[in-house]
Image 1 (cartoon, rainbow, N blue to C red):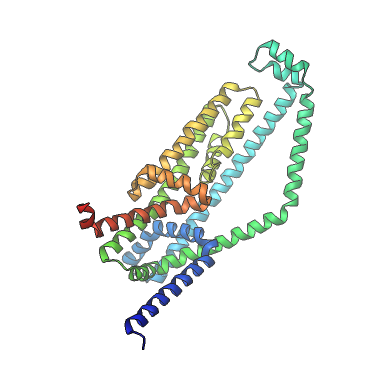
Image 2: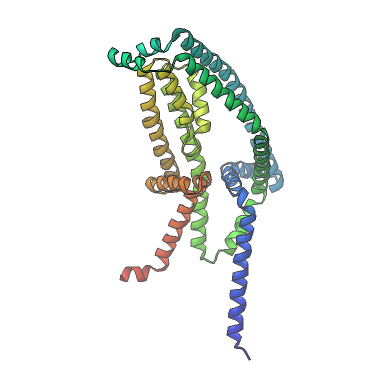
Length: 363
C-alpha cells in the first residue's frame, strides 16, 4: 500500500507541473500581443484616477465610470491626433516645397561637377587632381539618383501586399489595445486582487511587489513620453540654429520616431545634415552632426533612464543598461519589458534579503 504522504506529494507535484505547463502554453498564445497588452496596462495606470474620480464624485457604477473614462480619453486622443494630423500635413507641404526648392537650386547652381567641387573647402590642386581622374559628372549623379528613386518606387509597388498585411496586423493590434484598455479599466482591480491571492508570499511582500509594478507603469509612461518630447524639442532647436525651416514640424516628427530602437531621431536629423553638406552649408552640417549625435543622443540616454529610475525608484544606470540590453536582445519588446524585469529582480532580491536576514547577517 503506497504511503499517504507519497501519494499527496505526487498529486501536488503533478498539479504544479501541469499548471506551469498550461500557464506557459497560455502565454505562448498571448505572446504576439504581450507588448500591446503591456502598453494598454501602462495607459490604464495613467488614466485610472479619472475613473475613481467619476465613481466618487458622481456615484457612478464601475462599468459606467469605465465606459465614460474610455470614451473621454478616446475623444480627447482623437481630437489631439486630428489637430496634429492637420498641422503635420500643413507643415509637410511647406517642407516639401522647401526640399524641392533646395534640389532645384542645387541642380541649377551646380551645373557641373567642377563648379560643385570648387566650393568644397579643399586645396585647389587636390580638386584639379581629382577632376583629372574623375569619370563621374554631376549629370550622371542626378541620373543615378533618379533611377534610385524609381527603383524605390517600384519596390514599394511590389511590396503593396506586404504593406497591406502589415496594416491589417496593426489594425488587429489596435483593436486588441482598445478592448484591453476598456476591460482593464472595468475589471483591472478584480484581476489584481485575483493575482494577489495567487502569490504565495506574505501580505507585506505582495504589497511591495504590486506597488513597485504600479510605480513602474507610471515611470515608463513618464520616461518614454518625456524623453520623446525632450528629444523632439532639442531636434527642433538644432534645426532652427542650423537655419533649417519648419523646425517645429521636424521636431514633432522626431518625437514620434524617438522610441524606435537604434535609429530614433536620427531618421530625421541625419538626412537633414547630409542635405546641408550637399548644398554647401558645411558649418551648419557639422553643427547639426555634432548636435544630433551628442546633444540629442545624450538627452535620450540621460532623460529616459532618469525619468524611469526616479519615478520607479530605480538607479538610472541600471535602467540604461536594461534598456540598451533589452533592445539588443529582444528588439522593441526589450525596450518595454526591460525595466519590468529589473523591477521584479530587485523586488525579489529585497524579499530574499528580508527573508534570510538572520543567515546573511551571520555571514
